[in-house]
Image (tube, rainbow, N blue to C red; front, top):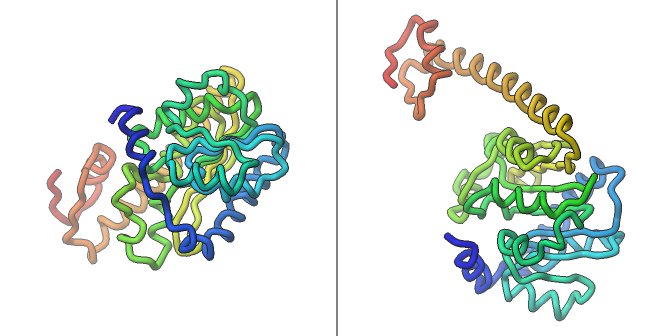
Length: 270
């Protein structure tokens, strides 16, 4: 898909049913705002941008900002906001096209948000790179997406969370890596299951120097090493358990292959 083709698809979308969302969204939006304000304590209140803001409900919660912009290709949402919420300014483009058409908007926002948008992107890394370009010095980027880890904690059937329109699925490690590769410093990344829907909330800050970038990569590598070690330990325990004598493992990689010689029982085929 090209940026123009994506723009055309999203431009004609009928949008979400506003009445069906209203009863549940208020609490969810407040949780997002509280997360941002808790971890971005020194944020400045000049300019806020949101990618995919729909009807602008989240933008409306941040009335402390002098300017609030939405990057929203849907004609349905844009028309509703223009009529009902003139205090918000909407740009009718997808993020990838917006960054090309309005280079003067780069490094202009104190806070950029993208809530349940990234999972629809055909290239999450490029999408986050474009968002990061909009963030000014010492500004923040907030991302919320569905959480693979959180799915293990919710009692809801998986089909309710594995929505067919989601091009990508994310873990906290993947979201952290994408942010770091965009030149951002992770401030706080976590997953949660409020309202029976598992989400990842990730807050990043614009990194200013080479040393900051090196430290972010080093911190992320350390976290990955710790997570991998724990995963290998848990996996070894599961493979050694007599209850798991018959087990199929899809996508057997080198890490798993290295574990197999240490297991006396069972036959394994990669």
